[in-house]
Length: 475
Ligand SMILES: Nc1ncnc2c1ncn2[C@@H]1O[C@H](COP(=O)(O)OP(=O)(O)OP(=O)(O)O)[C@@H](O)[C@H]1O
Ligand SMILES: [Mg+2]
Image (tube, rainbow, N blue to C red; front, side):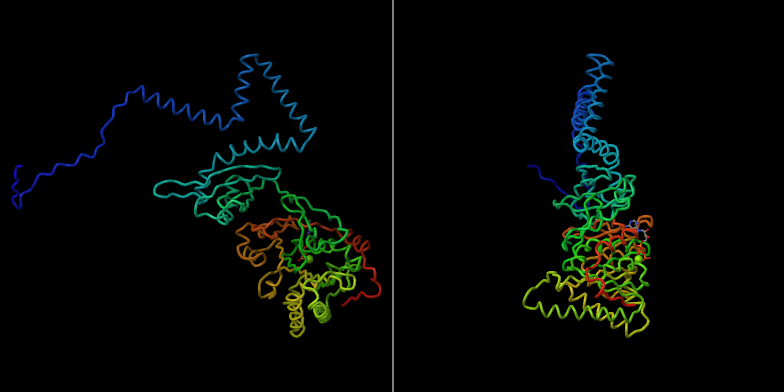
């Protein structure tokens, strides 16, 4: 083996390492063939994916080639006539199996898929990692009369709330105005609902009065999905917050209406408080066991009486039952208060105000189990106006003036989950958001509207039987 002498300080010539990949010579025809094969494969995949477009087109072409253009026109006319006939004969099945499957696909292609990747990027829902781009996957589009539901597979690291926050941005990106995100059974998916036409645009008329009020579900209005909205009064107090003219009156009256048959049979006692001079509730006087307005001292007295009834009842029930069941002797007592802040904040006499606050605090914290419920409306949900806000398990948010008020009423994060109470237009009184049992995302509702005539009629039909002797009006 030859020995190499290395003299210190001498520069050794270094040969550069060859890092070039060996070049392959590909014949031109092979390259063209590869491009063609790849293009054909992609075209076939597209044709299969959009079979609902390609199949009729191919069939049309075949009919035209085989039998001529006239026959093709005849076939098209026959298909259109068949569809119209189906629509006339059985509308719901036509919509379900004929019309909406087509609309789903057309809107998925022309509205959502076309702009999907760019919208995801501009709304901050796509991401890049190690040089690769990750875009959430659009899984399904389902359309109905009022809007589109888009099912999406989220990227790892995303949660439905991220989509809730971006929902309005997404709606506008797809040229719509309203959007909401909701979670599904699958932890990797989220459903976006975009509204094309407001299902709650029309006024909801008075709902039928239940023969026996079901305290687990009193019908008060219509939900966005077309189902009736039913409020659970059993074991709860209800707070209705909304700016002036937002329709708080319609919620109170819908609730009174849903309890009306109980009022007539004596199972329900309504105690009405109308501190704004009796303007709102006066028309329903025949339904009320107590009606107080104007005089703060009188209202404090009635509230204290309610506390006394509650305590006596609690003493009777102790050890006998854990939840009160309404009877004619021990009816459900519902205190209906219009403008709660007029009782808790705007009264100048401090003594009276403290009495009212104390009584309300007791009723709210102890009344639920013994069948004494408070249903209160208020304009301003700020804490300093209403110290008892957290004692109302059920809350309804109508139109509110500021975004921060939404979370005050419906709970932390409610606005991010889609309760846009501050965006409800003034032209839609009676529209609001509610939180349903077991459903994370707030639901939009329109409450039924009772005209003055409806209210008078209700009072006449369902007046209390012992109306004359026991009713007490405190002024
Ligand atoms: N559910 C409803 N559907 C349609 N219109 C409604 C509904 N509720 C209320 N309205 C309309 O809006 C108007 C204002 O409603 P309402 O008096 O109930 O508001 P409010 O929230 O009680 O306001 P305020 O705080 O000033 O008393 C009503 O006169 C009625 O014309
Ligand atoms: Mg009112």
